[in-house]
Length: 188
Image (cartoon, rainbow, N blue to C red; front, side):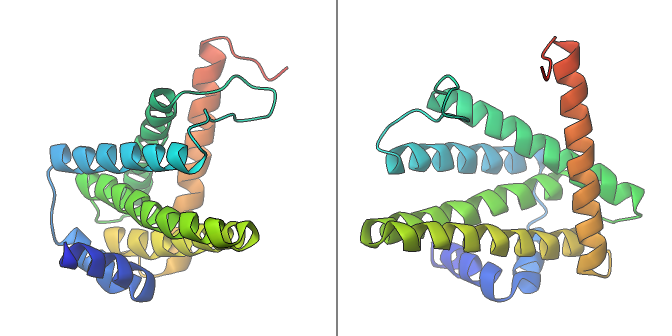
């Protein structure tokens, strides 16, 4: 447990070294998916506990989403993003493999989960401070993700990792738009 907590801390203080340690685990695809599923479920449980057990609404007018639906959506989106990071990295002559890409996404979810715990305590003290911490946490995790992607694919710069992540998001957005069009969801 101490090694796990140390790696969380190192992910924020020295993300490049933390990425090397995490990627040296060389997970199988099953282990990587299990880690992703566990972190997603724990994150959704914590989110619902922090919201007082209320169902999530994407917009004030939308139907409330139950925890299982939120977990399923989050698992699908993080899995798709992991695949896009892998395939985009391969297109950019990166060296990362798919299980490691999935593990990186699971680790980002774990870091966000650790941050949510801290944010929950801060919200109890001061809602404004908790909200500010949440924004800062998101920005820091994006930076950490870029460093992890750079280490995963050995791209040589965080700038190239940022381009890879941007292209992965474009791919996810286009793919989701296509799938939603196929099932008849319109933007009107």
